[in-house]
Image 1 (spheres, rainbow, N blue to C red):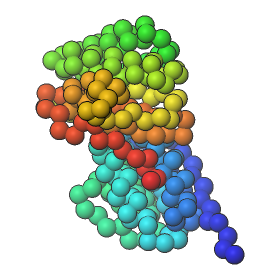
Image 2 (image 1 turned 90 degrees about the vertical axis):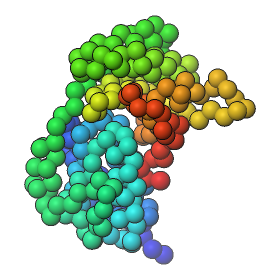
Image 3 (image 1 turned 90 degrees about the horizontal axis):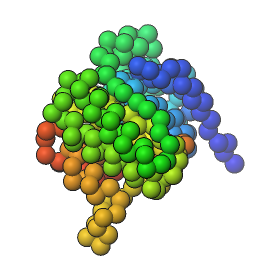
Image 4 (image 1 turned 60 degrees about the vertical axis):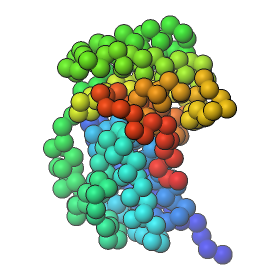
Length: 250
């Protein structure tokens, strides 16, 4: 009878970039645990995620594919590259956002060199009055970010995401607005693990139909304590709205 693999994940820091130290065996069982830890870190919207794998070993061939999926999802939201330090096996490098360094010191130095995007955040109760507070924060954030032309759209997205959390999650939530290039990313984190669904012809008016129509892109991410739903406001036309992301460990 084979023994279960063990992996310890320790989040050493979260901002402005995250550092996750892992120790143990990375295989089909423990990568689920690694994915949960990574999702929780991404929910804090760091500028990058450094994975310190110096004390790990590969239990099978799944690590490169897992890193690839994680990097693709992280690049889409929150736009954070995955920086790998001291991987226990060769990691193919391509265009998916993975950067590999031999040591943790080199990886952290690369993360420290990244720009820090401005953000605004507020904790809101699950009451209808929170929608007005969300619109106010969105307007002030766009002005502070130097993107006033996105003010109205960002207000609508912030209000709708907040309203969805008030109606369906019914938990305290955190609203965050971040500048990302010439876009503003609106994110609402709540304590309900039920993901929103893309509206279909049979249930118009449900889910996040307005968000799907207005945002350039949107998605959701499961965390250990609930979920994050996010939307990108920009002058571009919506191109991928409604595609939902699985947890990073899936």
